[in-house]
Image (cartoon, rainbow, N blue to C red; front, side, top):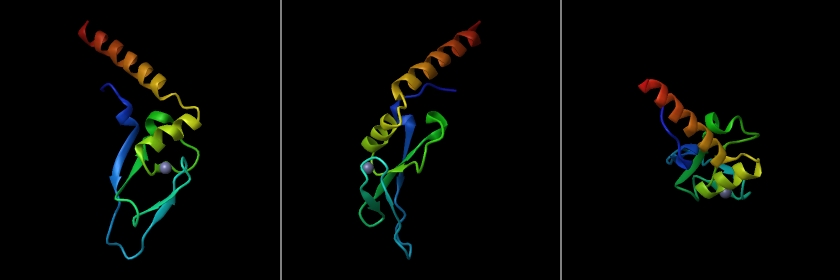
Length: 96
Ligand SMILES: [Zn+2]
């Protein structure tokens, strides 16, 4: 168990190149299309922290991840605060 930061809400992944077919998505935040042609990496939203997301949880950039979560009324800073408060408590219990 460990404390979390905003960085734990997403994972950057590399676009897979060299496949026969290019693949792409429409970013649910900025509505831009992004693909293995136009981007070298994308962001995957960590649903174990946010709870299940409506549609796809693949976005074109880190900014879009947080804009998207905001648009879903997911309180990222609140989740971080709650989680880390719990971690502090567990740590205290461990020491007793
Ligand atoms: Zn985007």
